[in-house]
Image 1 (spheres, rainbow, N blue to C red):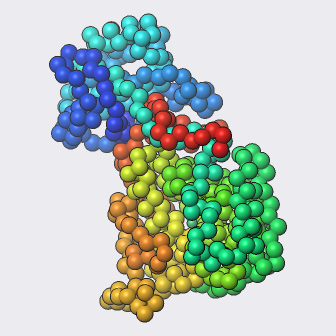
Image 2 (tube, rainbow, N blue to C red; image 1 turned 90 degrees about the vertical axis):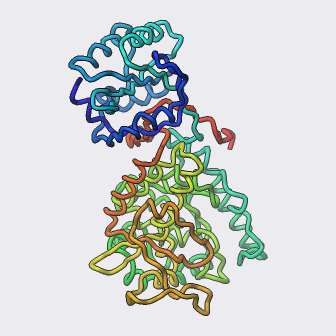
Image 3 (cartoon, helix red, strand yellow; image 1 turned 135 degrees about the vertical axis):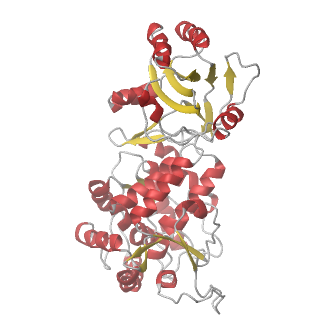
Amino acid sequence: MMHSLRTARLLPRLAVSARCLSSSPDYMNYETWHRDNYQQHGSQPLNSHHAINGNHPPSIQDKQTELPRTSVLMELSDRVGALHDVLKYYWKYDVNITRIESRPVTSNKFDFFVDFHGRVGDANVNALLMALKGMTDKLLVLDEKEVHWFPRHISELDLIANRTLDAGTDLQSDHPGFNDVEYRNRRALLAEQAMKYRMGMELPSTEYSEDEVKTWGVVWDKMEGLLEKYACKEYKKSMNLMKKHCGYSRHQIPQLSTISSFLQLQTSFRLRPVAGLISSRDFLNGLAFRTFFCTQYIRHPSMPLYTPEPDICHELLGHVPMFADRDFCDFSQEIGLASLGASDEDILKLARCYWHSVEFGLCREDGVNKAYGAGLLSSFGELEYACKPRSDDEVPSIGSDGHPTCPQIKPWDPNVAAMQDFPITTYQPVYFLAESLQDAKVKMRKYCEELPRPFFALYNAQMESVHIDRPVRRCVGVPDSSS
Ligand SMILES: [Fe+2]
């Protein structure tokens, strides 16, 4: 057995059906088979990835992912040369292998997952399968997994950017601007501008009115001192850069185009206009492409320190400076990549992780709790509530304003955060505290790797596309191409 193939990466737990071509007597469902074979033998996650197509340049890889592919699982007994004897049939029948991974089943048996170009029914593929049947202890042809639609290229974000939720662009009756016709017209204009945007266009510039800049200035003044006190060091460093390079000041609302160009140079992140709220799935999918969907409207001037939905103050003061930090960008992209094609259940888990970190995360800094979540960094009341030092024996209770008097702080653990529900109209009762942004990223990556995903996705920054390690069909929730 080739030693290098013993150290293949942990395989995704595929929820696929399988046709059994071996001498095994019964039709087998892959998941059942997987559980019986791997879990009962207690096989360990393995360490590195061996992919035969790893030496192709990215452009060729991307074209290859669009070709028809077949996946098989071969079980082989461990003996010197066993894999070599099998692989020579791929060469004999001119079948191009695109990926191969191995995993021990028992002390003397290994499973090999092999992807190759071609379909069952092609003459050379049929001949190969017949040959393999006689060479392997077990042979399964794995059917393509059907998954929720997801963008494969950054340009496909155009297909989801305008899928705003019902309440995403229409103001609700309790919105401070509901009865203000002028405000509603302004919101509609900015929404239309965002809806017209397509990838590759120049980002639209917005001329903000005197009143809008005044509202921004009120928020700025209220936040400035608190951010100095409670924001994490990464935020403060980036904010200084933003003031220098992106026109951040209390006297003007910076333009998305200036910020996006700056972020692309710093961290390859970018902003993309959006008309209003979009679903968690669509929003997280954007992060996979290092793209942040960003609103442009501002809250109603009657309540400058309150907004019922994300607005430009929340986006530019809360989120944007953090996107100038590479660790934070990588962290955000991890969640995004895991969201591609994920089940609704896993989207919910990832959305909760996102909420408890990118929106309301805390991190430790010289023994003090600091904020890195945008929901905190753009909310003067909650920032202080979450970060102010308190004694260890302080017990949370409900205060006269209806908020808990102090929050519960838990160590950052995505497994726990993924199950932690959250309110959206009150302060958070629970915050998650990471040791550092690096610690937050490492734990999030581990969580995403262990999630039972239909495939693993890698982002190719040069091609602005994702490469996935399994053939899948994107057939659930396909967007309307005319949107
Ligand atoms: Fe946000």
